[in-house]
Every structure is written in C-alpha cells, then in structure tokens.
Image (cartoon, rainbow over all chains, first blue to last red; front, side, top):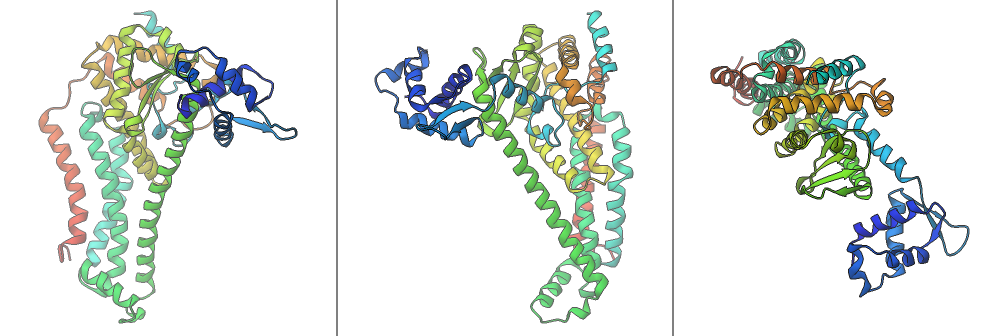
Length: 126
Length: 316
C-alpha cells in the first residue's frame, strides 16, 4: 500500500493530466490501472474509494484541488496547472518576500543587470 | 542604579548606530567571517539587553540600590505592601516601557518563527508534488524548471536540497558538486537559525540602523562561510564559474526581472560581488591573534551589560 504522500502525488499527477473534473471512482480506476513500479504492491490490495476521498479532501484543504458540488457524486479537478504551481514555487524562491532568506537559503541572490553583464564577460574569459 | 541606567542607555545607542555602521563598512569581516558573525550576534544581544536594562534600571531607581532590591520593590507594590507613589510617574513609565519592549522582542521572535515555519511547510507540500528525488544524491530533490536554481529548505532531519533541471544542464559535475557542498554547509551549520533571529530583530526594530545592517551583513557572512567550506573540496575557479553561471543565468529570466525590481532584496548584488571578489583575489585569513581579539570584544560586549545588571553595586 502506498503512503498518503505518494497517493497525493499520484492523484495530483492524474488531475493535472486530465483538465476535466473527475469523480473519486474514476480516479480510483485510473490509479489502479496505472502501471508504475511503486504501485506493484497495490495489486494484492485494491485501492479503496474512501482512501481516494481522504486524499482528495487533504488536497482540497491544501488548496490544490477544487470540488464541484452541483452534481453527485462530486467531481474533482486541479485548481491550477502543474506549470502554474511550479511558477508559484519558483517565484517564492527567486522573489523577495520579507522572510524569504530565513525560509530557504539560495545558492545565489538576484543580481542587477549591470552585474549580470560583468559576469558574462567574466565567463567569456574562462 | 541611576548611573548604571545612563551607562546602559549610552551603550544601547552606541550599539544601535555607530558600531553597526562602522562594522558593516569594514573589510576585515570577509577575512574572519566566523569571528565577525559572533561579533554581530554579540552586538544584537548586548544592544537589546542594554536597551531593556537602561529603562529597567532607571525605573527601579526609587525602589532600591540594585536590580534585586528594585525588583523586590516592584513585587511589594504589586502585592500592595508598598505604595505606587513611591515609584513616581516617570519611573513607572520607564518600567512599563521596559516590560513592553521585552514582550515585543519575544513576541516578534515567536511570530517570525511561526511565519517562517508556515511558509516552509507550504513550500514543502508543493515540492513533494512537483519535484522528484535525485537518483544519485540523498536528500536532494530535482524540480522541473528552466531557471538555474539551487536552494536548501531547512527542517531538522527532513532538511532537503533542491536543484532545478536548468541548473543541472548548465553546470558541470564539479560545479554542481561545489553548489551542493555550499548548500549542505548552510544546513549543517544551522545558518537558518541565525537568519531567523536576525530577521526577527529586524521586524521588531525596523527603524534601527543596526537591525537592517546586521541582517544584511549576516546573510553575506553565511554565504562566505559556506563558500569557504566548498573551497576545501573544489578549486576557487570551479566555484567562481558556478556562481557566475547561476547568477547570470537567473538574471536573464523573465521571472527575475519581474520580482527583482521593486521590493528590496536582502541578499543584494553587493553580496554576489563580495563573494566573487573574494574568490578572484583571495585575501589571507585574519591571524589567530586578530580573530581572538574580535571574539574577546564580543564576549566583553555581552559581559558588561550583564554584569552591570546583576552584580549589586557594580556601578554607582
């Protein structure tokens, strides 16, 4: 049985691949049919829909998944694309939020345009 | 008590303005980064201690000749055994200010910690979904993005180093190794705790020159310390190339022009220049005597206000 973290990842991968909203049942079927080295153990114990629902509600709480409540069963989809989330993450890394320095330590800070030109010159000499 | 309070006030002012300004302009810290780091911590701690201590001592003057007697007097007033009139308005005001400032400092420290932890948790959540573990390196994640980025996310035993695809294609194996040692040094030497303390110091007292200068200098010094550890394994040339490639690579990205302008950066270009300058024209490390002197000064800075506060009758 995969851990919740691995399942969250697998569910998000599926939701990012399929832009249209899906039910937990559909997701369960897709997850079970997915051939992946990490999922081999799942063959012996099929994934329960309740587990998928748990994972979905965790992801909803984290603001990654939204639920369409107008029809039953509820349908789920990703709030934004994978690329958008990566961009958000990168903005956090490259950005200048007040406590960014203390949150994560970057190899190199942002440089000015003039400095970047000097650096390129320096690299040309190497 | 009266003279102690004035002496502490003078110390607080010196440590809040001229000393940090001079230290931030000095060139020797790059040659003795560890000693300089200790000195900055001593300045911040002694500064805070003398600020609170000055107000506390002044407030306690009518109640006793030393801190213990004065504090007993305060307890007596609270319990109603002595009259508040003995204290007087001005001294009561000083005592309240001391209490408020201490509470403010502790609260800001806690709040900053909470904010940092929350941001890290959110960042880690997204990372686990968006990145994949590096195949050949433990505790390293790779994120699919063209920007050449390397950073570490502290979190005790769950600390991780993150590399981007862009970085891994840009750098050679040796250069990548230099970057990884640099990042792992930040984690191993617990630099995030220093950054947390100085970030809190700055948000608690943003109008003091010392808090801003201290944060900037400390964030530059930790980079120097991490570079020094990397230099034990790789050549200066490799490290310089890595820094220059990563810095110029990320400067060309639209993202950095988007976020680079406007808000003030803490790790300013000055830090990058200082790091490169140091690697290209290395200055000899400061002698043992010099470093010992700096450490002694740091110790003295902490000892003086502490002694003035706790030793009865140490001063006037």
